[in-house]
Length: 314
Image (cartoon, rainbow, N blue to C red; front, side, top):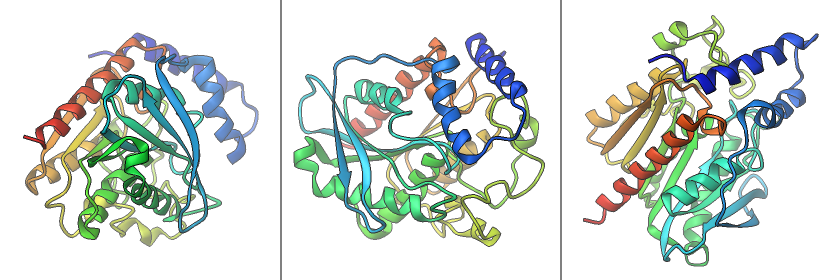
């Protein structure tokens, strides 16, 4: 299928912005770009009927700001989703992802706890992962006041957040922490090697994969950390007995092979797994409110998540 035309327009707009730049951006400018691009081309999804509450989660590495989303009219207790945003471990925020997590809360009929975990390079591996881990524990400890269901706590995230989600599913199994499901949206799950899609789709689709084996130095300051299962959950000693998974990939995503390989590994390990690959879309599509196809994809994988959670109660 060809690239979704609305996504193609976003790519053209972003490429024009990049071409106009006279110097490579600083880390602060890169972070600001996410907000600028959302308003300039990606668009902002207006989701009504969601109550929000800003909180601070006590954590081992310091307070973690978070925003709680509660759909109006949802019968409690309901699923509780701890969401870690994407951004290559160095950018992104609760505020930038606000439209995304609002839509997920509405479509999954769930409480969503969106976390502002610590970012690299100021806080390299495993700081952000630790914040996400502590947020899962906090959600369990406060499940009644959240209006959530202790049997249906979901770890979710996209890209870097999906990386956290997969590795935290392994941690939860080993720590005896109950997870109802994992929602992994175009996750990065193996930093130890280069997959074919990283070359086949290396340029032209916003996320670009340079022709080197170790592009994540801001996050993994030591190249040997690539083989740590927290950074590369696909390398975990065992993937058996994990929470059911919904894995999302996009046709034109350079790291889509991460998701499909993880799917195969989960299925081989006996993990209940649903995989959805969305034609015509790219890495980062959950933020593309100007693309009806992208918004329909969110609605679809949220429906799959609901089905997975319901099936665990049968």
